[in-house]
Length: 105
Image (tube, rainbow, N blue to C red; front, side, top):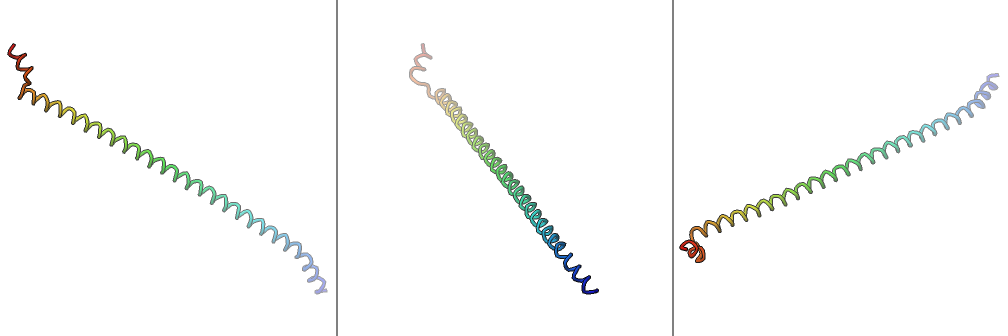
């Protein structure tokens, strides 16, 4: 009798084991897909962060370029004003012949 029970248990356990194996395999596939989805999402987040950083670097570079242009324009303007002041000062100290004739007349 004992033998019959153990044979029955063995026969009943095979489909149960196959079901457990299929369940385990299915769980592993779900786990792999979930991990893959997480990895894909993380890669997208990293790429987005990288793109955002690239945009910020480009914006900063453009601001620096604009600042340099503004500074250069300001220097040129200051130089023009300084030259005009020097020229007026020079004309006051050394009037031209035409200015002397106009002054006398």
